Amino acid sequence: MSLSDEINTKFWLNPPWGDGQKKYRLGLAPIDKENWFESDISTSLKKHKTKLLETRYEDVIATTEDSIEAQHILLEKIITTENKFPDMIANISLSVPDDLCIIESNGSQRLISASVCSPSYWNLNKKIGKSLKDIHKPVKTLNEKIGNPIEKFINNAPMEMPFKRENWFIHGDSNRYHTKAEGMPKTPIEHWVIRSERETLCRYHEKYTLFAINVRFSKFLNLLDYPEAANEMLCSLSTFDDEEIKYFGGENKVSKIKSFLQSHLRN
Image (cartoon, rainbow, N blue to C red; front, side):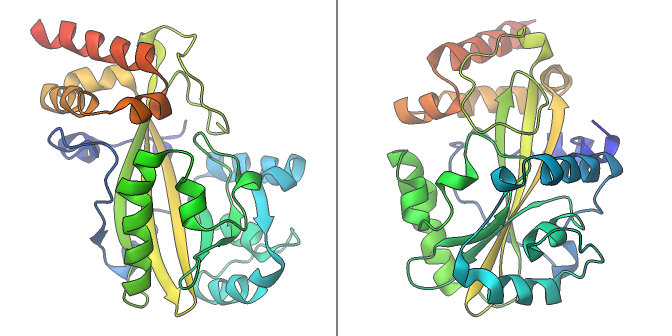
């Protein structure tokens, strides 16, 4: 991981699990347009994306036949000098650190074009062309807490104003490419990482909205340097229902994290 891909100190002072609130909530807040993308793409991340585009293009890029206009308009918003790949969304993705997903703003709100090089527990080819409702359908709780509110938000979102939320997972490694849930990691918990996703939604055109995901990592053990954040994570994990626990990696994984935090917070 390069420094630009790592979680910084500011993150720990206001972590995405908040003051023990439930993990899966919309939590969108407006940000200035100049902060739509938090930073330039790092050299290491650009290499990661380029390698996947060159070797697994059909796994990380997906578009519907009617997405050309949406991609072209986005290209006018996010200028890039890249032109190596056949789809505009692929070239645009090499100019920003985020994964990019274009969604219809109206109607069924289908995912019509995407470049996803850092997925967490989802497969792009199984999602392209589907509505937001269908994308979140496999996890009922997730659909109720995030899917439905996002649909309403996009319908009423102001033009060209980005909104931000934070998401988080805990993985057994810092690999960026996770299409399947890993369950209980095989590595010792001391080697686990917190994966933070800075997510933004911006209705960049009346007909189209961009969902962007910037992935960053930190060693799980770094959490112990911030007892308040550790305690808040413990509270958040305790709010998970059965479906959320399964989506997060299973009861054994969640229990191990909780036990680990409890033992260190007592010391």
